[in-house]
Image (cartoon, rainbow over all chains, first blue to last red; front, side, top):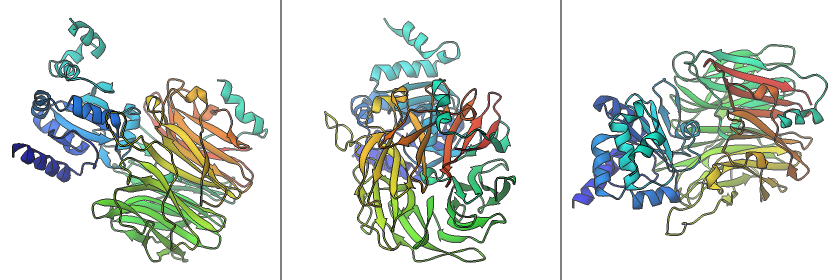
Length: 166
Length: 386
C-alpha cells in the first residue's frame, strides 16, 4: 500500500511540475527543472540533475541496479532537489541567468551526448560535477559526500575519489 | 586547419564579410532554434533571418530582412509576449512566411521589406512550427500541439492576403489517435508534394517519421525514416536508441532529410542523412554525413539547404577542435565530401546553431550564434559567393 501511495505521489509531483513522460526512477521525487531549482533555493539543498533519454537502456540499467536501493532513495529524496530532464525534449526551462531554453538545448551545453548524465549543482545552479554513464550505489554515496561535505570547494571529483579509495 | 581551404574549391574570387545582425552583452542569449532549423531563407535577392533573444529582458522574436545585397538588414519584432522558435520559408518576390510560438499559442504571417503583416492564429497552445510554400499547393504550416495526453502534429493551408495571413482548415497529419508525442516537424515542398518529417515516440523511443501530401489536406500514413535500432538491449533494458531534430530540404527534383542519430551511442549524436527520389514517398541511402574526424565527438544542430540546381549542403556544430565551431559538408554525387569550416564560423569563442540557405546561384547564406571570449553575444550572417 505504501508503495502504491509513493507511486501515486510521484505521478502527482511529475504531473504538477510538467515533467516529461520519460524515464525517471520510481520512488524518487524528481520534478522538472524550474520546480527543482525553486525547491533547491527554497530549501537550500544541492541539486541532482538526471539527464535521461526516452527509451535509454543505460538509464534503465541505472534505475534498476542503482536507484532501486532503498537507502539511496532515502538519501536523495531527503537531501537533494531532484530534477529529471530528457536529453531530446523540447520542454522549456529557465536558467538562473534568465535564459529560457529547452531541456535538449541544456543537455547539449552540458554535454549530455551519452545518457544517463548526472549533474550535481549548488542551490544557485552552479555545476559541481558532471558524471556520465552507469554508476553504482557506492559511486553515488561517494558523490554525495563530495557534494554535501563541501569537498568540491577545494578539490576535483577525481582527486576526491582517489583519496576516498581504500 | 586543413579543411578551412575546402570551400575555395567551389568559391568565387570575392568572399563577403560576416555581418553582426544582433549583438549583446553576456546577459543576452540569441537562439536560432526553428523547428527543422528553418531559420534563414532567400527569396530572389532578399534574405531573411528569424531568431529569438532576450535583449528586452524576456524572450522575443525578431526578423532581419534585407531586400537585396546592397541594402542593410532591417530589424522587426513580432509575436505577443514571450516568443519562441520562430521559423521561416521563402515566398516568391522577396516575401517570406513566418511561424512562431508566443504567449497566445502558435501563429503565422508573411513579411517583406516592410515587415511582418497581420498574423493568423493557428492554435491556442503548442509550438515547433514549420512553414513551406508550394508553387501550386500554396503556403502551408505544420506544428506540434497538445491533443490530450500527447503532442500531435497539425497542418493547415495558409492563404496570403494583402493585410496578412488567413489559416484554412486545420487537420492532424496522422489521422490515427496519437499513442505518444509527435514533435519538431520540418516541412518541405518537392515536385507535386508537401513532405513533413518529425520526431515520433510511438515506438517507445524517438524515431524520425515522414508523411507526404499531394493536396495539402490528406497526408499519407506515417512512414519510418530513421533506422536507429528499436527494441530493448540485452537484459531487457531500454526501448531503443535516440534520434532527434529532423530537417528537410529539396534539391533539384530530390529531397534530403538530415537528423541527429545516436545509434553509435558512445560518441553521442551523429549527423545522418537520407534521400528521396520520389518526392518523399520513400527514402533510401541512409548515411552518416560528418567525416571520420568528427566520429568520436557529438554533433549538434544539424541543418540542411538545397537549391533548384541540385546542390545540397549540411551544417552543424561540434567541438572537434576543443571549442564549438560550425562545420559543413557538401553532397558530391551520392556521397558527402570532407567536412570543412570557414574562417568566420570557427576560431576563438563558441560558434554554434547554424541555419543556412543556398540561393539559385549556389551561393551559401549562413547565420549562427557566437559567444566571444569576453562573454559578449553576436548573431552573425555570412553570404559566401560560390
